[in-house]
Image 1: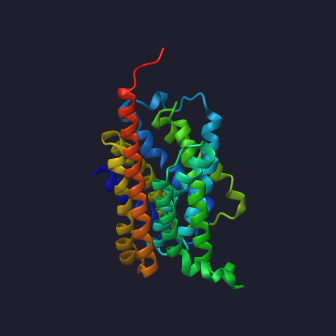
Image 2: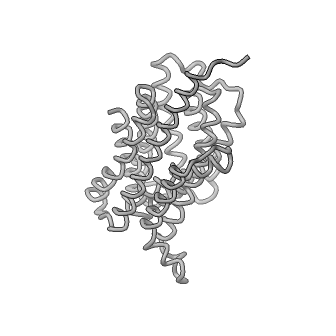
Image 3: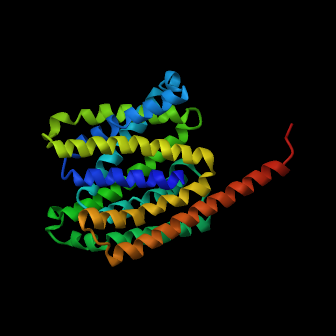
Amino acid sequence: MLKIVSVAVFVGMSSCIKAAGTVPAGQIVFFRSFFAIFPIIAFLAVQGKLGTAFSTRRPLNHIARGVVGVGAMGLGFFALTRLPLPEAITLNYAQPLLVVVFSSIFLGEAIRVYRWSAVAVGLVGVLIISWPELTLLSSGAALGDQEVLGVIAALVAAAISAIAMLLVRNLVQSERTATIVLWFSATASIIALLSLPFGWQALAPRQAALLVVSGFCGGLGQILMTSAYRHAEASVVAPFEYTSMLLGIVVGYLAFGDLPTLNMLVGGLIVVAAGIFIIWRERQLGLERTRTRKVTPPQG
C-alpha cells in the first residue's frame, strides 16, 4: 500500500512539473531537490535520526551520485515538459532494463539468458513507444520537433539514471538510507543552483507554487518508498512501480488532455512485462543463493 501511495505522489510531482510549463531544467531540478529537503528533515527529526543523518566518510561518492543524478533529473524533466505525461512516465521504465545491462558491463555481474532475453524484449517495447518520434530523425526538421527532443532526452535520462542506481548500490553497502537521501537532495540543490546564470526565468506565482509542491511531493514520495521497502521484500514491492503507467494515463487525460497512443500502450505493456519478469527472476536467484549459503558448510 505504501508503495502505491508513493507512486501516486511521484506522479503528482511529475504532473506539477508538467503543469508549470517550459521552465529551464536546471531551475526545475533546484525546486525539486531543495524543497524535498524539508519533509525529509521533518521525517528524520521525528525518528530521532537527524543529528547523524548527514555524517559520512564518503562525501566524494555522494557528490558523484549527485552529479549523475542531477543529469538524469534534468533530462527527465526536460522530457516531461515536452511529451505527453503517460509517454514520459513509461519511457522511464527503460531504466531498470539498463541497470541489468550496466551491471554486467561495469560490475561484472553474471546475467543469464533469461534476464538478457527479458531485457531484449523490454528494449523492443521501448523502441515501439518511441518509434513515431524516432522515425522523424531522418528528416531535417527532427531537431526542431519538441516531442523528438523529449524522447531523446527521456532515453538518455533513463541511461544516466541507471548509472546513478549503480552508484547507489555501492553507497548502500556502507551508508544509511537517510544519509544517501539527504546528501543527494543537498548536493543536487547546490549543483542545480549553479545553472542560475544560464537562463533561469522569472516565475509566475502559479508556476512557483507548482514547483514548490513538486519538491515537497518528491521528498514525501522518497520517504514513503523507503518505508515501503523497509516493511516488505523488494521483489514484492517493486512491481507496484508499474502502476504509475495507469495513473499517468488517467492524470494525463484529466489534467492535460493527453491520450495514450497505440504505440505507447503496446510498448508500455511489453516493457512492464519484461520488468516484472526481471524482478521475479532476481527474486528466484536470491532464493537460490540463500539456499546455497544454508547448505554450504563454513570453510576453514
